[in-house]
Image (cartoon, rainbow, N blue to C red; front, side):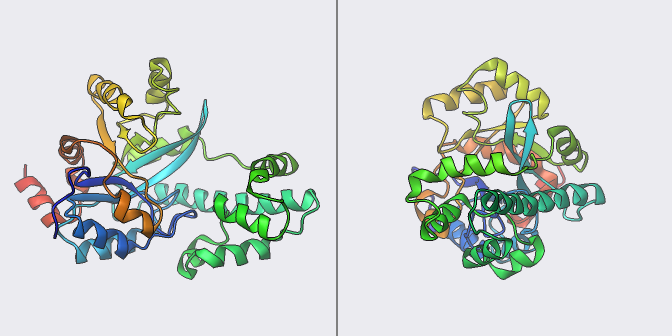
Length: 312
């Protein structure tokens, strides 16, 4: 084990693995890097799924010195549009009500992928479901596709593929093409917040808004209040690469005032990013202790947090 670098925190509460449609990091690599860096706590927050839970639990047994807990990043439709929510502390035995929500996300990913194919074909491009699956197989492990099916494709991969197929002349044309694709086919919105968050909260998980600076309209308190109520927020990701350092104290003060916890995460998606970015979100160590006090009944590792804090 090495000491945590002075510019890194000993925790990272926003990480993705290959079980996210847009990530390729291996679970073992994430935990090995965290152990080498001397980190106390990490959470795997894959997009829309808890499919990585068995791999996370296996890695936690290999690295018992690292605290972790079941988590996911769920995107919901709100009054301002899609919002990413970091949901922490799911039970290991997933209840049927939550399984239904998670299957809805599986279906949403498959339907969104299919809608992109329909839209491209409506515009005269030959991009079929078989083409999409072949593209997914270039970067997604077979075990993820077996469970999740043919999801939508990561934007960067799709953009490069469209250039490769000469659907667009260069990457600069991608956004315009996708706007036209969305006009040419019906796209299903993300599940609504009022059908996701109550289920998440009912099973004992806590909800924090991810990378909030844009959602909060750069610190507009009326918007912050709106989303706090609408999303039933328990916390805010006050430290994230997209949050300007000067806004961290503002979001932190808002958390303190409203009895919410603060989190920090690097949002790493790839193995190559871990060495440079893991724990590099800028949040202080005190936030982790605050977070774990709220999550003590859900932690895995570090001797199950010293016997659930010695029985509290």
